Image (cartoon, rainbow, N blue to C red):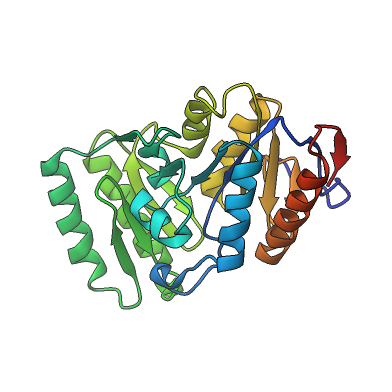
Length: 262
């Protein structure tokens, strides 16, 4: 993983009719909150996402660790393509939903094991996603190592699972599932196919998405500090909002497809 230089241009050159847009949610479209249920996307930003989706003929998707049901609630009334739980759930532009599930006995045993262990660590939170589990410790940083050890032991006990570290969270999910694979899958389908992908994300969970986008000569944008495979950078969530507003303005001006620079 390489560090993106501060002198690297923040905004790439785009063409208005050629791109497909992929957005992470927490830390990208929505500011991080102390608890995941407190996160929200401002109404103005939701309206701008709808406008951008209209501008690119529906080639816009949310790609998140959250389940699709939560993405729909956060982005309502916008409703479109999405990859939830890092791609374990995928909904294409035609509304077809594909879901990878854990065996019932594995899900039940793992849920009980995680609940029992984390009950002894005040401030930690277990988020059950059906086919994945998120172990949060933002409000209990003193238990970070305990949570990580528990997650590692759980993956060893249940073959076919993998860890996905994030910001003050570690997730247990089916192996082989990641945002890069989800983006690549959507890029093979209409209306994404034939376009150049643009992906904006902020966390370790987004790095495979950046790699996949780079492999397709797309535009990868990291939000915030830290080393990354992304080629471009925005400083924070407010900068994402500014980028989105400027992108819409320029797309509206560039309705014949001539080049412009963000």
